[in-house]
Length: 188
Image 1 (tube, rainbow, N blue to C red):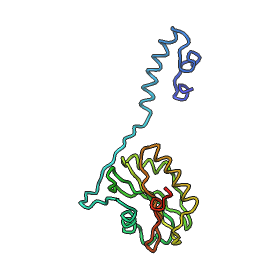
Image 2 (cartoon, rainbow, N blue to C red):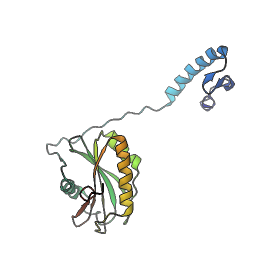
Image 3 (tube, helix red, strand yellow):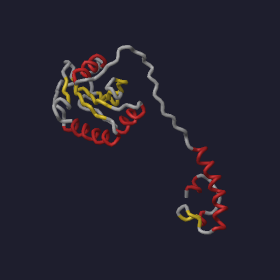
Image 4 (cartoon, rainbow, N blue to C red):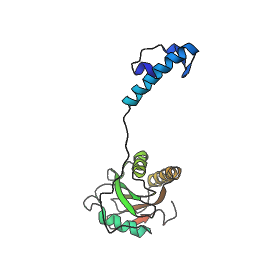
């Protein structure tokens, strides 16, 4: 099947589940398979993972409690949109809980936004982050997490445990500079 898709022209009845049926067809097939390996290797894209810290700052943001991250978020969140629509961001941390960066996962509507957990962890893995803090805003000013906020946090927590990336907190922030910390409230 694979050979046909790649345009090779030898008979697949000599191969059953990747094994050669007879010794005579084996040498013929191995030659073709070696040739096929060359075709496969040349037709697969190479992926390179890199992370370059472009910001050389003497001031680093070390996170020791929820108020540290809340202060950073209120300083960096777009004041023109915090009341307009929900946004979901992930704060990426190194092993000493120093902020490597903040990545905006999604920007949604007035009452919600979608988060793709696979993209969240792709970003965390690509930046070699050992810890993450989730955050999103409630334009309405409500500090109480919704059931979907709690479900999403639990889903991300399970995935973070599997990948050995610490989920340290999930903050909900409001336009009036208040915040709710899942860790402080004991529901993380």
